[in-house]
Image (cartoon, rainbow, N blue to C red; front, side, top):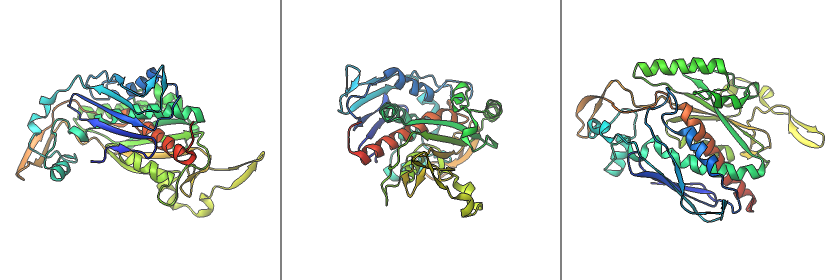
Length: 358
């Protein structure tokens, strides 16, 4: 398995969903950064299970413990080890799935690749492993503050319910005031009702998370094969349940002509900028100083609390009904994960580009 993300700023993760703990080691963290443990914990709290009626009821405190790389509140430049202990596993809930392949899960592919798999919540393939990403992403955000980069993600679509694509029409801070994490209060209420409806049916629903990066300097990105949008896409597609990535106008722009798509350059008081930002802040794989905007599509959670057909490890047909505590919609808890992956990617590319201390 490849368990390390990044080039200079790196994260190596460990742990399983129903093991003793999950955690990781961050290497390449710049020295001298103020390490705000309360902020890191708040980022984990945004991902934490059991935070509302529309998320899994699993009760985990998800308290992070930093093991190294921090002295008197500042990063030392040495590897930062951290751990989050699992305290509320219900492994028995998965016993009826020990010898079968759950539809649209990683069971079959893991079993065939490695010859063994952890049936308890998916083991290493569980979304619980994203805890490590949120810790590393919080550390990256603390470093990015020094260069004025901020990252805000939000739920922009659940099922058929969507808000407008232009993020400038919304106060994005309002996304953190409701359980769905959508900046449109009216649409957020509709989304929540839909999630509760599918939850009552034992079903699940997917949607889209939009992410906006402000303050990114010109020049991040390493063509030919290290383009910034490609790195962001790879980071997002590594998140559990992600099925699509687009930036700028993305797929919506294919129906328009080039004359409608091009971002015209202008001189604004001695600074070169563009009148529009249809390219999403990246040109030729390199950031151009405009806001970076991208969208991430999440499939419905694969675990359904209803009877399904499948086959067992011997290839025999069988049926089963999943038990346990599962999200009817992953989006509200995935918002901080999207931000975390964006933060790690941008810090990594900033350090790669500059090769200097922050």
